[in-house]
Amino acid sequence: MEGQALCFLAGAGSIFAGDKLLTTPNPEFNEDKEMFDILGLIPKEAFADGEKPVSQPDPIIEARKEREAQRAAELEAAKANRDPQFNPRKVTVQG
Image (cartoon, rainbow, N blue to C red; front, side, top):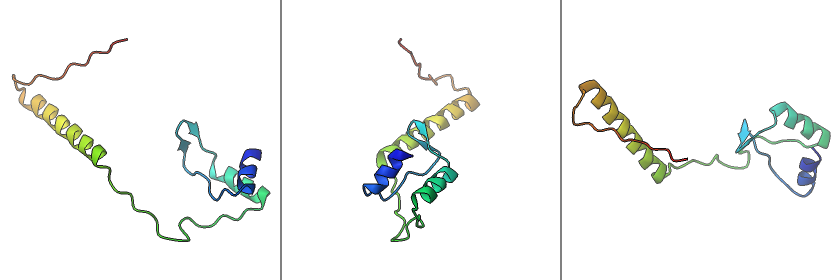
């Protein structure tokens, strides 16, 4: 907790929330609340100073999802029709 206290003393204005931070678990809400109480900090409600930002879809990710959905549909159609011309991709793992 000392590191977090120093961050707030240096001017940090926020903390990360959620279950996981990239590769490490995030502290539980009650642990953050306890730290705030010890440090005498009073949290404010999220987005109290403005509107919640709206996430825009990423065109690259959306295109990938579309390709994956199309491939899944092709696989299902091939399974259902037992199309003799269907040639599934082969994956080779090199180690």
